[in-house]
Length: 98
Image (tube, rainbow, N blue to C red; front, side, top):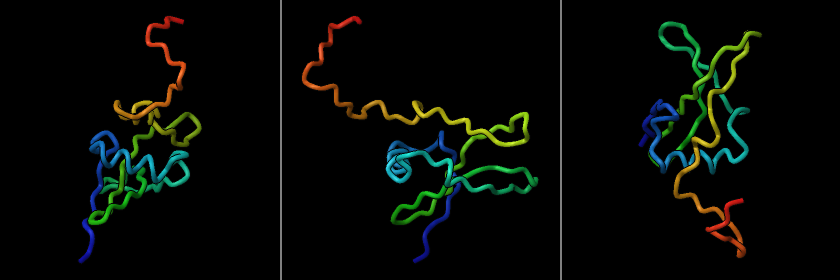
């Protein structure tokens, strides 16, 4: 059985796929970007993400800078899940206002 092929924007990924994307590209995905063109011959950029039944191309927003190159429009903090565990250590004081 052949896998489904889906193009999906990073902003529209469900939390499970965002987590999978972070695991696959823990150091960022900039070096894995692929440039494609749409039917209007306009460029867009994607990174591959594969699950058991689907091959995703995750569309990444970019802007063209003054030198004619493309810059990512991804804020790394936006990709953090609200329920991600953060190890604050044994000395955590929730009343600290420093």
